[in-house]
Amino acid sequence: MTPGLIPQKDGSFAISIELPGTVVAAQVLSVLAELAAQGAVVHPTTAQKIMVLGLSEEAAKAALEKLEAAGAMIRKSGKSLQPRTCVGLPYCKIALKETFSLSRAIYEAFPNEELPHKLKVAISGCPACCSWANMIDLGFVGAREGFKVYVGGKGGYQPKAGAYLTLVSGEDEAVSLMRGVLAFFKERGQKKKRLGALLEGEGLADLKKFLGLEG
Ligand code: SF4
Image (cartoon, rainbow, N blue to C red):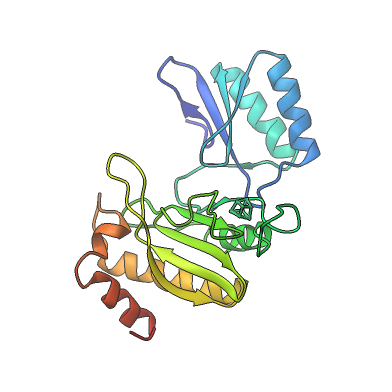
């Protein structure tokens, strides 16, 4: 199977485009417009990616080539971490922080993480949390002094709010804290268990100790 082609239930193939900076380049949009005009289904996903659906294998291979030539980041494994990211400053009227740059920094810092189970990341420019950053495994929520970090949240059948972990002052500190959280998850995590399950009981205190945080 060509890496980047995703077989679908109906026998067709899909391609998933990651959007690390949370914006879509004009060249990629041009190829997407061409594919849509030819009958492909172009679907913006809930995980802030773009899926091109309904392609034959031959059409999918040709589309993959064109998209990569246009600079699209094609999802070829489940190991990269693209945060779900709201619009933030300077566009959103109530934002406290820019979000796009942290999103790109995280995507670039963690291109190939081998984790015990899935881990979702989100960034919001203010506590309104439009990207659900307070309800996800690892969320960064814009505050006046930096980003508040929440851990162990999730949606699904039994949604759970993330627990407040700490405040980071900016991008470098956010990436470095995330490195520590991932190291904890790799060391203590188990298959089919989200980070939240690991943080129950004394887990949050253990994580803080692991990261060298107070209290
Ligand atoms: S979370 Fe805040 S900054 Fe982000 S889009 Fe919503 S209101 Fe705007």
